[in-house]
Length: 206
Image (tube, rainbow, N blue to C red):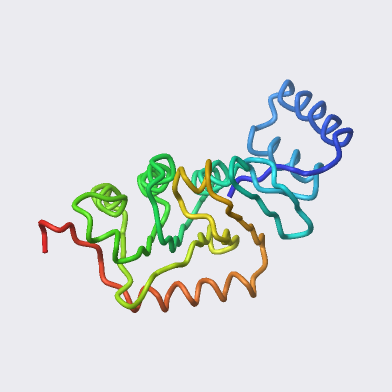
């Protein structure tokens, strides 16, 4: 997952100057980026600036607090895996980011509520058509809203993946970074949900 620093501006400026010098010296870009991040320290997720951040926790709020942008950048920045449990998904840019991640061979799994399988066309249909593995939870209301990125970082909160949640509703989004015990708990819960789900089928394929 791509990250940037939340370090002080002076430190960031110094690192930026050194980065330019290294690039002029034809040092490989990958090494330049790595050293840039090491110099900056205090890594923070790439996306909208959080409303608050301390240690491994960052929070965003809506309306208009950058929740959707942050989720989109998290999905775009995934390197290995995305495990997504989402109650309501109608935001086209988020759906496209998920499909694009699958196309670049990130391992993607999405669990959704039964309501997504009842419409003639929904985000579940779009993702399924993009060959993303979509699962429909078979019990009560699948009201979770969380994303596990690369098995290391967890986004959770009340934020549904909709434009209304971004622009109209009072919502929150929380990032828990690099906390193995918490991530293991979410991964275990995701596997429980998968075991209680069935692969999505379009209404005309049932």
